[in-house]
Every structure is written in structure tokens, then in C-alpha cells.
Image (tube, rainbow, N blue to C red; front, side, top):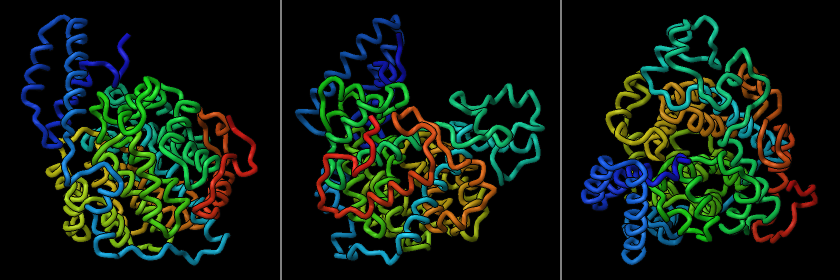
Length: 462
């Protein structure tokens, strides 16, 4: 049985790419992979596994991390500009309980709507998306996807995503279908309810193994999951034979940390770091920290550019992710058509895999700037950019949802959610968004130094 993301040949192939991107030596590894492709499949897999294990042993003796892109939290902060320039404000917000609840609910609903918009076409690139939309006169995108009026040859050529793609179409939506982009937000709420702000990476790992079905995890998370089962704690769970360690998986787990740290991006980045290091390193970690900071700051700041600039100051200034975000900030996005902006994104970041952290983070930032606070414009621009459409739509929707608050979000996008979300997580299937927002509000009002060993008076959902 070949298991995706755990197959040695697949891992070796992507390890070659990963090492080239992070500036490590890869040519000997590349030659070995090319040689294995000429051998019988089972022999090649055994040899690939041996090469990967030898590689991991070598890296343990001589770490490949550079000072410009550290994994340690203190080193990350020393490499960022926020603490260097003493520009971190005192954590504060002026929202009353009703307003804070409305903003948190806006985040949950906005994330779900953006995710749902991108869900049926995840993995398709821009030309395909445009061809599909033009085939039934829905270009440019301004609503949930529909197959009504779409020619059969298009439907046959570009089938909807296998995992609940049909349920995500406009004519079929009945609540938010299950998606890993929402499962992680709910799981992290569970962690906060049971452990408070003092949770550890081990607490996160335990929650993963207890509540997440293994085949509902993908890329870096699936590798980390099996590393945890094999007794490897963080950060080894992220590094051992894990070529997906800079892909988008940690980035999609950022939101809850922002929701429970309104106006406190410094704390949000620390919570994000504790979570990310289980499955990711370097820019994979920074992606989660960047968006956790941005989401936390969205409770007190509404200008997308200032939000991006603030979040940027919390990740290493010389990292590849920071450089990518800076490229976006330097573009005259307000004077360019969205298609031209996407062309420039393709020029800069088109060599990355479609679920890498760097290109998807850059695309979402560009859409936030182009959308300028408009919910529909932002999530539609994000999804029309291709790559990881549901994850990027979810992040963009979450941010604008917080800025606007649930009451201001368009019914066109929120009503189909039916205040309900499906999930394979124990205790969360058919959860109400209003209840999830209430529970998030309760967690956010805890003292930061409060230690908890129980779920805050809520029923234990294991």
C-alpha cells in the first residue's frame, strides 16, 4: 500500500526541491533520485527510504538551518524588526463584549465563506478557473461556484474536488461542509479550552493524535502525525523525513491564535509558533506566525496595508517569506488590474508548489490590498488567483470578517452557511458558528497566565 506523503520516493523527490529552495546542497540528492527512477518500484522505494534516513542522520549532526531563517522562538524574534525597534505596543483593544463577539463571529463566518468559495476548485490554476467561469458566464467570480450552464465537456475535463466539491456548489450548499481549514480552528479552540494560553507543543500533539483522523491530514501534517506516533516530539516531528515542512499546512492553522489575542499580535505569534513547530520549520513556521499576528491586529486596525506591515515586523526580516511580502507591498496594486497583479505573482513565485507557504501567503496579501476591506472583492480576488484556493480564501475571509464584524457581512455569502459546520472532530460535528464564537470569546477573556487542566466548565468533547 502506497500512502501519499509518506511514500519514500515522493518524499525524496520533494526533499530535492525543498533543499534547492532553502539554499542547501541538493545536486547529489537529485542525481540519486534520477537514478532510482530507473529501478523497479519496490527496490527504488527501499533505496529512497535508506537515502532519506542517512540524510536525516547527517542533518542531526550538522543542522542546515541558517541564522537568517531560525526555528527557535527567541531567535525568530531577534531576527524580526518589531522587537528590535521596540515597536511592540502594549496589548489592548477597546471593544466591549458584544462588539468583540461580533468580530470573532465575523472571523469564523468569513473564514468559512472564503474556504467554501475556493473549495470545489482547489488545485486548479488561473487559466483553468477562467475557462470554467467563462463557460457559464460567471467571469469574473462574484458568487459561490455553480455548474449550472457549464458544458459537459468542461465538467468532464475539470471535475470538482473529490472531497465534498459538489456539496460546495451554489445549488447544493447546506451549511459548511467539512474541511481541514476549519477543523484546525476548531481543534485549536479545544486546546485553548482545555489548557489555556499556557498550552505546550506537546498538548497540541496530544490533541492531534486523539482527535484528528490520520487521513484527514495532508502533506507536512501527515508526516508529522506519523513521526509523533513513532515517538518523535517537536521539533523532530517536523524535521524528520518531512520535505513538506515549508508548505501551507501551518499557515492554515493561524486563525484561532489571532481570535484569542485581540490587539495582541506578540502573544498570537507565540501561540502560533508552539503549534507550527510540530509540523513545520523556517518559512512554514513564519507563515502561521505572520497571519496570527495579522488576525490579532485586525481587531484594532482596519487598513489592510498597515495590517500587513505590522504582521511583517513579527517574522525574520531576511526570510524568504518576508522578502515575498515586501515584493507585494512594493507593487502599485491599486493602479493595476488584478490580472496584471497575478501575472507579476506568477513571475515571482510561480516555481513554488501550489500548496507552498510563500506563494500562497503572497497571493493572499495581494488580494487583501486589492480588496481594500471589501469582503466580496477580497475573497473572489483571492480564489481567482488559483493555487490553494480554499486555504487562501479562508484566510482572506477571516481577516475581513473580523474587520467588518458578522453583522456587516453580506447575506449573499453568509446565509448559505446556515450557521452550521460539519466535522469529523469529536464533539464538533454540526456545531453552530454562533456557539463556536461564544466559546472563543470565553477563552479570549481568560487571564493570559491562567493555567487550566479542564475545559472551562464545558462538557469534555472527547
